[in-house]
View 1 (tube, helix red, strand yellow):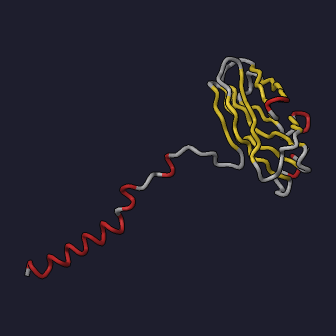
View 2 (view 1 turned 90 degrees about the vertical axis):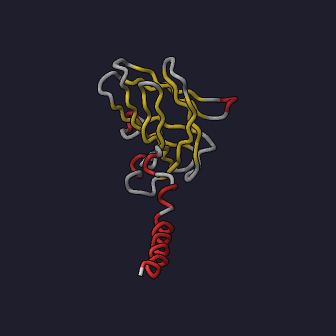
View 3 (view 1 turned 90 degrees about the horizontal axis):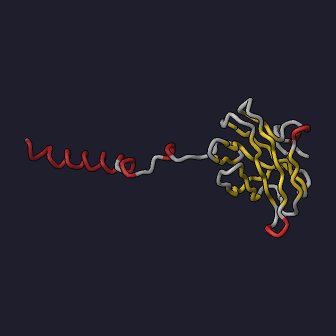
Length: 156
């Protein structure tokens, strides 16, 4: 009796192992950091740029839209640089100590409009962020247009 069930038992064990074995070696995707929105993020010590993206209408100008989180407890000047290395443009965004969340680009009075020939909807545009003595970094910011309703009012 035992000899009849042994091949069936082995076949069942192999089938279960074959069907579920890939999960033992698969990389767990939810442990990988990612930006769950249209924009990108960067953290520099106690200042973090969240959901940074550029909104353009004609391709020559774009509105830099982002949320900046300042947890230093002090006012901070955030340096934003863009453009070709021989003619970089620099803008300074004064971040208040309070509130910690600071919106850039969503209000016409608080827009940072970037002018560059390399701004093309659907592409990535390099922008350098830095503050104080923190190590700055260039991130590739996605360029979107005003086609979607949530972005049409953000076009410069």
